[in-house]
Each structure stands twice: as C-alpha cells, then as structure tokens.
Image 1 (tube, helix red, strand yellow):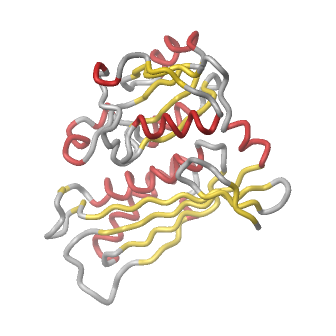
Image 2 (cartoon, rainbow, N blue to C red; image 1 turned 90 degrees about the vertical axis):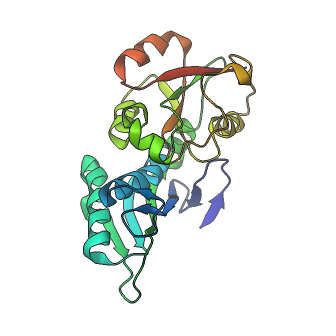
Length: 250
C-alpha cells in the first residue's frame, strides 16, 4: 500500500493497481450545548455539519463511502446520542447509517463539546483521475456563501448542506467539485488549479468581489464548481444557492 500525492485535504492510499482508499476527517470544538461552548446550537446540528465535511471531500473525487467513525469527547447520554442522531441524518441520505462506528467519553465529565469524524471511502484509480480533471477555459463558480458560527445559523439557506451537495453531484455537466473550508475560496481555487496544472484568471480584482475570497467557509458552506460557461444559467436554475462566478481556467 502506497500513498498518492494530492493537493486536496484528503489522504489517498493505493490498495492495488485499480483501487484507491480515500480518507478525510473533520473536527469541531466549543460548539454545542455544554456550559463552556462558545456557540450554542443543537447537538444534532453539530453532528450533521461535522460529518458533512469529510463526506463531501471523499465523494467529490468519486469515492464510495465504506466507513464513518465518530470520536466524541463527550458522554453518550445525552450529548453523544444527540450528535450521533445528527450524523445519521446525513448518512440516511446515502442509505448507509449502518457504516457508523465510534466512541464516547464515559470516564471524565466534560464541560465543552468536542468531536472528530473520519470518513473512509474507496474509488477506482481511473474514476479518481476523471473526477480530478477540468477542461481549459472552464469557469469556476462558488456555490454558497462563506459562513461561520452564528452567521451560519442565521443564514443556513445560503450555505451548502449535504442534501444540496447530493443534488449538485447529480449534475453531469459539472467537471469538478471542491469543498471550501476554513482557509477560504482563494486557497481552494489554487488547489483546483494545481490539480489540473492550469492557471486561472479572476473574473474581477479580488477586492471587488461580493464574496471575501479569503474568509473561512466554516464547515464547508461553499463548494467550488468547475464547468463550461454555457451551463452557468442552467446551474443557477437547478440549485437554490447563491452562485458567484469567480475565475476562469487558462
């Protein structure tokens, strides 16, 4: 088994000549309903948003989820159980709730919510290469807005959730999908360009964008999409998210 290089925030392990193991993870802390949590939100939402990120990361390269592991730094009852319920809500959309395994903290009383989620998936090498390729002159758009914490809770309809991600995955005219996390849109745009060995030109100078290209997108509230310009209007009609054209490959 050998590792493959990728600019994305995932690990690629080659199992054999045809199959690749894809691993992604995410964590959350200080968000929940415990005494010292900085952002108060339901535990189910914490579970949903935390598992969403690694699920989208592995599925964005065409991989099929084979295992989901939750490491919860909280007691099972009630906090852990509620977080797991949230995780399973997203897994139910895949019909794969049985893939979940994990652990909780039963020895020490915790005063702040903390958890990590790891997703393991598998993909054929040929399919992986297909999902990591865009055409020259494709445009890159941002679907969703970069939102974090309380701003995300106040504008959830403008952020990518797992259901909307699955809707986008079905659109056969999207060449690539790349989740945007805490390092911001511009960072992920550079990754997308490196993946394709292409340069890009921003549609406008950075300070004129309605989006802050360097702002954290929190739990992947934004997706970068690579597509032919002719499909842009169709994309806007098929998904209920803010769509912003940000760059073009050259």
